Length: 184
Image (cartoon, rainbow, N blue to C red; front, side, top):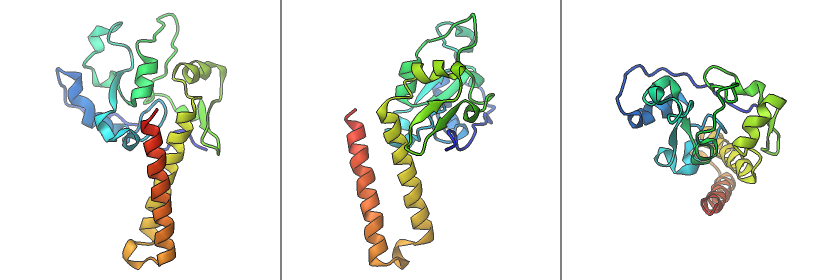
């Protein structure tokens, strides 16, 4: 399975003196997804809980603190695991806009994320992409996509009772998973 569905593209050109003001443009440019793990922001109550990561940590690169090209839309898990990790001797993080993560990470059919190279094992282990919760997030995302496809193909007002019951079961399952997710 493809790891990243839509590659981000930094299109925002306005400059702010406070990096926090970039959150909504980042959300758009990063397709409403964490660029490290590909988790959609709805899983963490939309953008309210999503964070702005300084790709090159602001503690080490203070001159880049408000530079849009150094900012990444990130889920709370990835941002906290990545933190200020940086090694100036070698490049250990690859910018998601400049590099195709699909060449380095993949999702298995069971929603498990795996590295495709030794170099990417660093990112895999530092972001803890092996955690079960990552599989749960991917499953929830796929369920949501499935429900949306069902709704497009069979709008509520034209669907049969059987199909509406199926959609309701999928929604209920997704909500149960979401509630469990909140407990992590």
